Image (tube, rainbow, N blue to C red; front, side, top):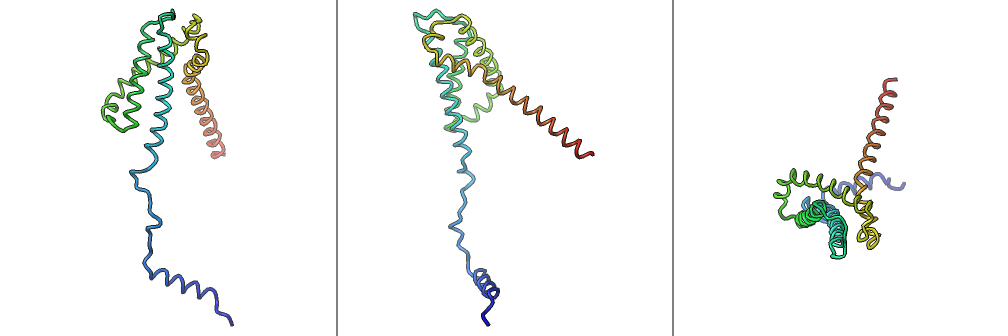
Length: 178
C-alpha cells in the first residue's frame, strides 16, 4: 500500500515550522515612503500649469496695442496666480508647509475673491469682444472660459450626487422598514 499523501504534508509542515523563516524577501515599504507625496505633487504640478496658463493669458493682455479692460481684477488674478504657483512649489518641495497652513484662512478668502474676479473678468473680456483675448489667442480664451465655468459644473455634479445618495438612502430605509 502506498503511503498516504496526508502524512507527507504533515511531515513537510512540521519541518517548515521548525526552520527559521526568512522574511527579507517580503520586506514592506516603510510608511514614510508611500506614494501620497508623489500624488500630491503631481496634482500640484497640474495646478502650476493651469496658473501658468492664466498668467500667460493675462500677460498677453498687457501689450501696448491691447485696449482691453485692465482693472483691479486683472492685477488681482495675476497676483493670486503667482502666489498659487509659489505655494504649490513650496508644498511640492515640502518646504514652508507650516507657514502655508497658518495662512489657510487668508488664502481661502483671497481664493474666493480670485474666483469672483476671474469669472467676471473673463466674462467681461468676452462680452466686449476684446481683440487681444478673443481673436489673438482663441484657444487660450476658450480654455479660460472652460476654467471659468468648471467650479460651477463641479458644484452641480456634487449636488446631483448628494441628491442621488439621499434618494438611494431613503429607498433603502423604506425597504428595510417593510
